Image (cartoon, rainbow, N blue to C red):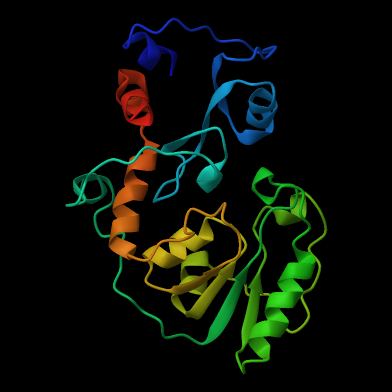
Length: 234
């Protein structure tokens, strides 16, 4: 990022312990620090893992918020050239058929949850879909047990196996704001998303959504060259 900023003749420094000053522009990793800088009056560019494909190969960049709570530029790309170049084949045909409703667990304490305990919500959703005659399965996040005990969800047995298989055999994927909503929508599954912080929130046209999402994450080379900074600033 420093190299990319210098490519735009922007003066910048890297600080391990930054004391925020109102009006300054700050680039940081994650919202745990970002929310502190924003509350102090800084303009904050939040970097995080990407959303499509290899999430370690791409870095997302949003202003003043995490994921969909941040501000992204609108980049005209009706033909989806960037999506096709980087994620060709990722957008699968609609496939609403499946054996169960899948509730996706998340990592307790993750900043995207804003302090919310999701277990009551898991049970509420399980009861909701069972009342509609659906088989419901629960898949804890693989890292959840490292933060807190994974509690059973009444009426929703734990589903093991690969995540791609879990999505493939689902009729509907239910998520609070997990990136699994992105994976499911790309896989052609119907989704229920609870929170506006999800990157799968609020879109009607799936193709338009996928094309826009490709402009919200960048490779290291694109960050280093200054291209990502150009896009982030509209």
